[in-house]
Image 1: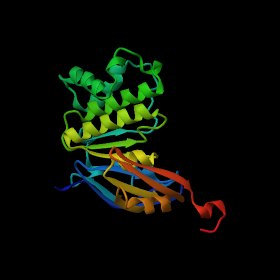
Image 2: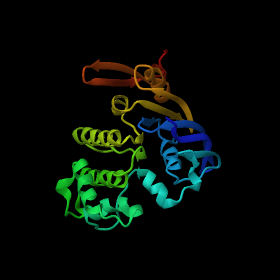
Image 3: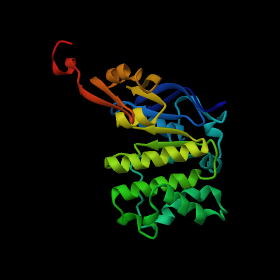
Image 4: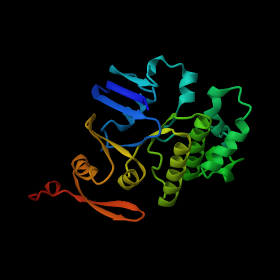
Length: 263
């Protein structure tokens, strides 16, 4: 299978600082978590892949075509983006917020059915008819996920880019929405790339990890156990791995050198 997305020596410049070069590739159906400390460039890398940030040098290609050459409507049909803190400024109805994911597909006779199906898949069917600005943070997260589902609903082997999709959610809801996102991507063969901070969620739900530090890729690796030494190096902590039939968990403790003790 050919590459869906290819980054070739891609460099971003933000605030007088270079991020990159990034040389990475992604195939349809793969799932990747981007991990790294604050300021490592995780969200910036995701925005570059979404064509929301321009490159200083290098290139990014989608389906072998330079990302910069895609028409906006065609790109919106090929990839969907869930940005960090994607609020809505006005008191829009929930269904209208979800319908924003269908703008590039007008006329769209199936829109109404897809909106309600997307809400159901995001465990948000009960929110239909509500105003978005009256919802709790967790309810808004469900609706925004439904918007992404609606955008990519009738696409096969597309690209889903999500930035901290589970931030500030309680554990039950975070697991519920992670399962919904994975199921949706797997059903359609979409590649999924997510900026994550929760190590346990990343290790249990993603096939690959892109580890970023100081604007560079430290590693492109599988999950456990090979990733543990790299994660310790990345965050400057010690990690202990626990494993059972339902998955893995890591417990972090400060590295000795950070505590001023001999290693």
